[in-house]
Amino acid sequence: PDQHPNSCTNIAVLCVIILTPNQHEVYAEVGSNVLLSCNYSSADSLLWYQQSPGSAPQYLLLIQHYTGIEQRADSLDSRFSGKLNKEKTRVDLEISSAEVTDSALYYCALRPTVTGNLRNTIQKLILTIQTQTT
Image 1 (cartoon, rainbow, N blue to C red):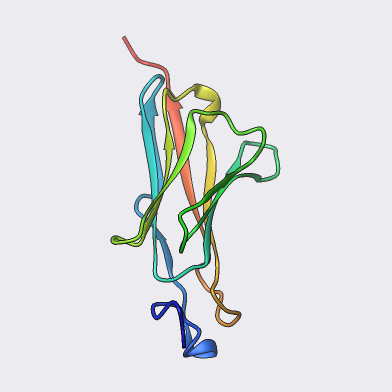
Image 2 (image 1 turned 90 degrees about the horizontal axis):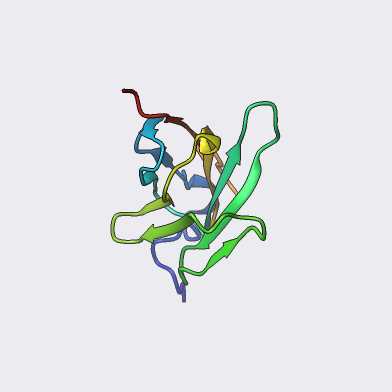
């Protein structure tokens, strides 16, 4: 018996996994709390990456869908946290007290439940942190 009836295992190759960012660009001020979100249709694990200009993407964290367990990069600042909302099939990256250096391209990605059509398994979000204007 399938332990996870919402997974794609029963239809394997026909399964289309969809991952959609709630916003493609986010602007926030220094010191504010920022929420980046992606909706998904099915996944085993959901991941967040950060890519600063001129650098390769850096792994931030992974959240296991069925257990909700979060696995963080060792160097990840405590201001960053992941949150999984299973009812809304949404994964969030929360950044508290945003800094200018948090401005980057963020990727939400999913590790599918099965191999098959991997279309739309990575999505990009652009975060720009601005200093307060007077």
